[in-house]
Image: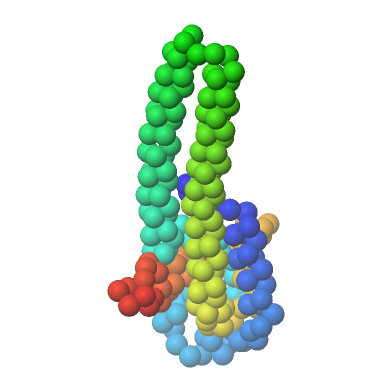
Length: 201
């Protein structure tokens, strides 16, 4: 259940592009003049920052919580599928044993009804799997949206004009990667993203 969706990576890429378009870069000299504490926190002063989108989500408290929930839902669905499969196999065996005692037309009617039941069950279980997958995709979009202000702040503090997907950068200094810093700051703001008793985050 852990594989990242290409659509989520593309969404984050678009979000980062919007950051670049909507935020005026701060001059590195101005950022450096405020305090040396940011350097101690590992914030580079660079015109270009990079980030690892998959790691940003999967190593965040939010992403870990979503992964646990999806794995739990997947385990429930797997157990349900095994139970249904055993029931259908038993029903099929019973129908086969009754065949010799039935008229061909009557058996054919029961066989067709059983086949339709199998197909409908498969469609229903496949829909449940799609819903679980959609849960993960929706959670990623929610995470990206909630993370944008944090990423914008990091970009301003670094005096950067862009945050790029690390995998698309041919050559860059390791210090330009802000993934770990972004995870720490996002965790501080979002936590694991679970709703509290009042339904707030």
